[in-house]
Image (tube, rainbow, N blue to C red):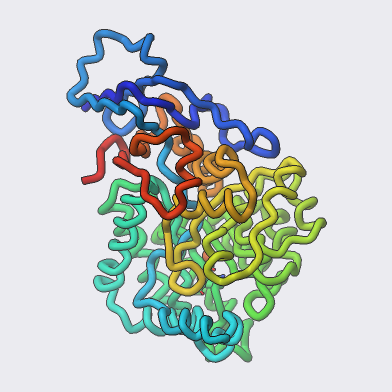
Length: 413
Ligand code: NIG
Ligand code: FE
């Protein structure tokens, strides 16, 4: 199957295959081709260039005239929790009425509330609820997504979540990476015996998950009131033994040394980073670890935004992800994420698009196949509506300027 897209007003994020992430001042550059064509063969990008060089002998099965429209890589959302049961609307209202996220969690709400709901929900029902969110984010332009477990906190339930992620991956064309987050919170019955829950993660959950190849990565919520740095290190170390590279939650509410722990264990990414001191920024320089910001979480909880300007000025890369989950970010709209990064974190549109495509792909270990317009990469593309410039995408926050989404070469119905 061959599809030709012609008269593309501007083709965004055109990269050489050797570029797997962009950092520091390079983030301000978004390479583009004006008045372009692009050819999709089966599930991949097979050619592109300026219209003047359009080959004559293409013979496509399908030709799309993109007059006035732009094409960019589909979003790569490297941090989500979209497999969950029910919702937490009541906690949303409780927060409006003055309770804090922490107070709600301390009353048994928060993650434990979601865990109770998930543990009462059958695997089929969990799949049915989760697939609606997956379909929604695909329509909103996401072409690759990481999904975490962590809303059961029991051996059987964590496996159930990971099986649901595996089933979504089989049933849908979108690329999915699975992360085991058994260390998301301590179940009430283990509050006074933390070691026993950590042993359960390491001795019971991890071996099963590795045996059944249910996860690619391991995550820990390293935060005051959740997992200490020492516990985080112990769990990362065990995950690595079972072949899972760490990608961890750090510095959401407090800076307690999670970033340095992540770097020590060669985490692929450290995520959240709302609360950063100068040493935290310094320690990320010249590492392989991608800092991931989640501005929709800051927006929804009213907590600080990741200090992107300071980090970029120190030469760091940044990836942007949604954090789609029932408690802190009930939205997986990457268009809103990009817009909010521009408006609230003062990232330029070029930086934000780099952060949500190539750097997002890096943060889930797929930037050799996703995240840029590169021959041989997956044809995961967004075709915009007619726009005056790509600045309009973050500028018109809240509008949906997507005309069509291609995943693995096929237009979403
Ligand atoms: O990334 N911070 C930890 N985990 C999720 C939210 C958990 C919840 O409230 O359900 C997050 O924000
Ligand atoms: Fe998260």
